[in-house]
Amino acid sequence: MLIPGMMNDERVWRHQTAALRPRCSEIQVVDITTADSIEEIARLALQSAPEQFSLAGFSMGGIVALEMYRQAPQRVLRLALLGSTSRTEKPHQLALRLALMERARSEPFRGFMQKELIPPSLGAANKDNSLLQWEIVDMALLLGADIYLQQCQALNTRRDYRDMLGEITCPSLIICGDEDKVCPSWISEETAKGIGGSTLLIIRNSGHMVPLEAPEEVSSALLAWLAGPT
Image (cartoon, rainbow, N blue to C red; front, side, top):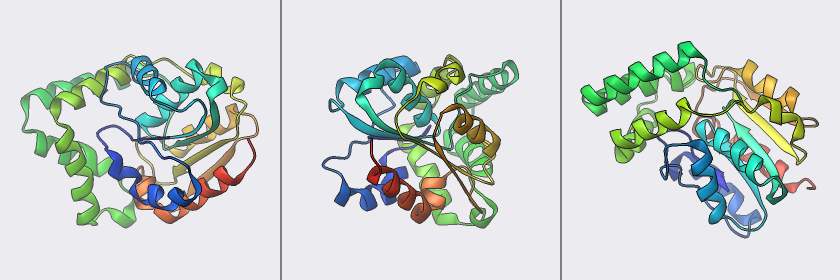
């Protein structure tokens, strides 16, 4: 099961889906547009999930993955978190997100997404990659402003998962880009330290969008993660 990030659709996983398909009996991309709370998104995802599964979440999807593990730890065979966090929102982060929500209600959505999504999302090597920038914005535009506000609400009200990390016993892989401005690498290091026996991979010259910016490295790491014992 692959979980997209905020304002992403299944295309964010397209490279990994192609690479993993020969090794998987089934691949599901989780819909995270179903509710305005992380808990409810996770609950609905578990309803349509197989009895047991390997679970990879990117960015907001990683938060949903942690909640899915919290709700049904016995069903998760493996866990991978990419460019994600186990922390809740701090007051200054919440204030910033609330201000962004107000702008999303009042500004043309395309221009708003181009200004707010692209600069923090990509590493230096992709800052002029117009095709990748178009794809990121296009995913957001297809989802629309209402889904943006809904996902903001889910992130605003999420719990802190740091106290749960020590309870995660399945094989766990943590991946991030060394130029990630959304979830800096120290956050992934903190998560990896909290999950006993986890593997940490910091990908050089990649920003936040690691599944698209470093597709071969991410796919290779996920294949090795799937090949290991549960």
